[in-house]
Structure formats: C-alpha cells, structure tokens
Image (cartoon, rainbow, N blue to C red; front, side, top):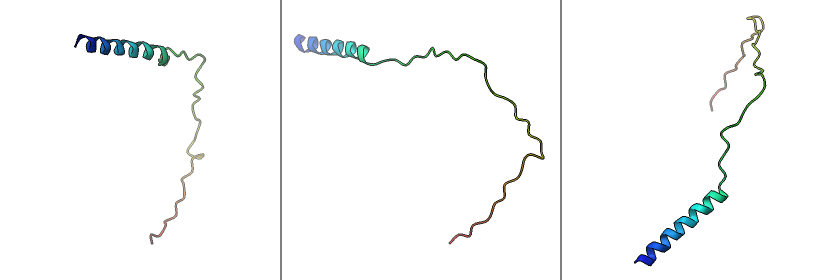
Length: 59
C-alpha cells in the first residue's frame, strides 16, 4: 500500500516538473510605447450620405 502511494506521489512530482519545463506562460507585462494615433473625424452633415436600399422579394 505504501509502495502505491509512493509511486503516485512520484508520478505527480514528475508531472509537475515536466509541466513547469515545457509549458510557457504568456508574458503579461507587454509594454506599448508611442503616441496613440486616434485622430478625430471631421465630418459634416454634407459629407454623410444615406445608403439606398432595394427591397428583395421573397420566393
């Protein structure tokens, strides 16, 4: 009985070590540099045009 518990514990430890070695954690400290390039839109009502739709008959 003790031998089974020992083997289970050994397998668990090997699994944890292999998981730490092969699984890479994503980097959460990504730094973004530079200025944002969000420029405001200069749209007047004359520049905006409504879309024209056409009804489609159902068969």
